[in-house]
Length: 517
Ligand code: ME8
Image 1: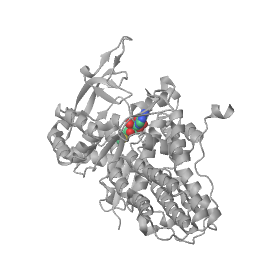
Image 2: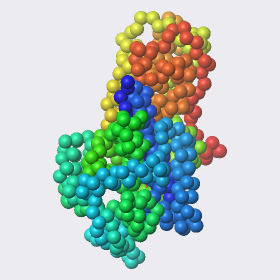
Image 3: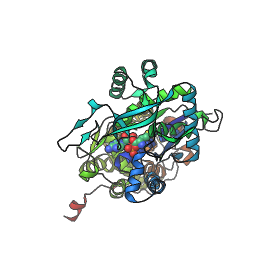
Image 4: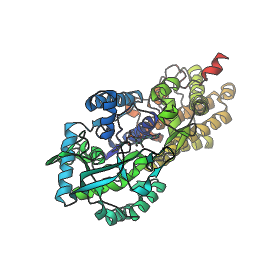
């Protein structure tokens, strides 16, 4: 039996259409899920939508529809985006589903039974948009006369009866968790940020609302709906069925190996979530990893700036794998990243068209013309042949190490390094010269290059699933051999195998303006 591996994205608010930040998170998480699958793990990959809360209710009211209808419509948009991006998620959870209501209410009852929930009154500066209360010193009144919270959203004074979670009782336990499990939070900047937040003292958390009703009801007190974060975070365990049955078919996936989220919600995942789970007596996820924010040409995306790029347009313009590649290569996963059309175009041409695309097409065209379209039979290998094969054969070790720490960009860089080395090898060996002087040697060089192309395509599958498959078709790799176990000597190309006529996989990107000129 292969080891289970459970990975999640945040669940998105469907109060609007998905934007490029959502697409980015899904692409990155998909690449990690695909990587582990190809590496032999039994993967469960979850994404979905976070459909309750005041913000949803307000947006729905503004549009003159019910929150159910709003959730349904936009949740479908998120599902569609997943299809468009070729996301390989195994499930898509909606917090309005019955299975989720049941799990959340059970988790609540367990926290209550453990003595961590009490009723009290709550008053404070509340941001509807952040769905969070802030302390007075975290807010400011701006020249427009409006008071704003730390995320730059307006806050209002709210007083209500509320249930509280005894978060203050978890300060030491959380600090011990961060110390005992140094990998619990990544990257390091976020870990430090969370530790200093917890060290500064934790207040009990208001976890129910009476001012609106679009949410999961508090067991035994119908006037209250649960605070949306108690509801939302629990989605990760709902989908495994672990709370209902620790022996159920998906229970083996809990605890999750890693929750992938954006840096703005690290506090919820690294402070509240483990505290809730400890209270309910449930196992904790192994890791929470926060990626950075995408900036459009260096500016924060915002609807008012009009630069919230629609992922559909981006994919239609550049191609899906090209977009996936760009974000995973260009942005250091864990840091903020900036993108622009020029930047994407340049990357596509440098790394894909001129890089792997060119290497594959030059070597495979030569095989097609000079080796009767069959994988040539290699002669004795030279030190140069051995050296380039070794680089390709061993790249998986680097990729595994980097992917285990969510350093996707470094894994991609290791694959691109093979392309660069192989280009150098190909140029130095000059098989087009050997064609006239030493055909047997030409065959060896083409064989070695084609096997390196095979390995590059195998490794690129998590990043660019569709185009990698095309390259693997060109080197006639059987479907069942497209796994990491076949990297290196285990899956070398078989001499004599017939290859299809090569066709280009990565066209050059020409900016629309330039093509008119
Ligand atoms: O926060 N760049 O939902 P959400 C990169 N429902 N990532 C971005 C981004 C950007 N510009 N904008 C948003 C929520 N994200 C909650 C999560 S989880 C139990 C509940 C990321 O739709 C953001 O950081 O506002 C988050 O990880 C995800 O997109 C969904 O954001």
